[in-house]
Length: 204
Image 1 (cartoon, rainbow, N blue to C red):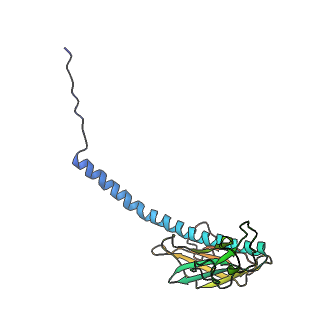
Image 2 (cartoon, rainbow, N blue to C red; image 1 turned 30 degrees about the horizontal axis):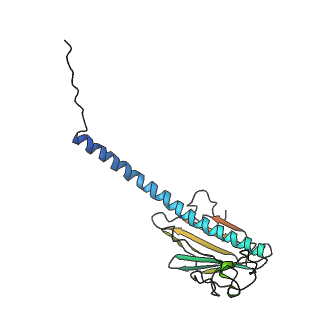
Image 3 (cartoon, rainbow, N blue to C red; image 1 turned 180 degrees about the vertical axis):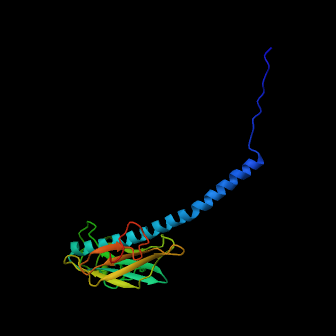
C-alpha cells in the first residue's frame, strides 16, 4: 500500500526575515556615499559642459554673423544666470523679447523680414530667439566667479578678455571645475584641484 507523503510549505521565520533586512540595510548604508559622490560628480560635469557648449555656440555665432556676440554671466549668491546676445550688457533674466536689454539673437525665420544686424524692436518676434540660461536643474552646483561679460569678435572668434568661470559642488565633496576662455577665443575645461577625474589639472 502506497503511503502518502504530505509536504508542508515552509516560509521564512521571523529571525530569517530580520537577518535579511539587516543585511539589506548594511549594504544600502555602504552604497549610499558612493551613489551620492557619483551624482555630485555628474551634476558638476553636466553644468560645466552646458556652459562650455553655450560659450562655443557664442564664438561660432560671432564668426558666422561677422559681428561681435556677447555672453553675459550674472552671479548672485552662487546662483548663475547667463545669456548669449548680439546686444552688449544684456540681462539674462529679461524675458521680454523686444526689450533692448534682452539676451537674444536675431534670425531669419524665412519670411525675409529680418536681418542679423537689426535691433530687437525692428524685427518680428518670430525672428527673435531668447538665449537666457541657468544651472538650476543641477542641484547643489554653484559658481564662485563674479559677474562677467565675454565678447567674441567676428575675426576668428577671439575674446575681448581672458576669463575663468569656476563651478563648485557642495560639501562634503567640494569638487571644482574651471572653464577657461583665452584671448584667442580658445575654450577649455580643467580641474583646479584635480578633484574630477577625466579632466586635466589647471595649469598642467
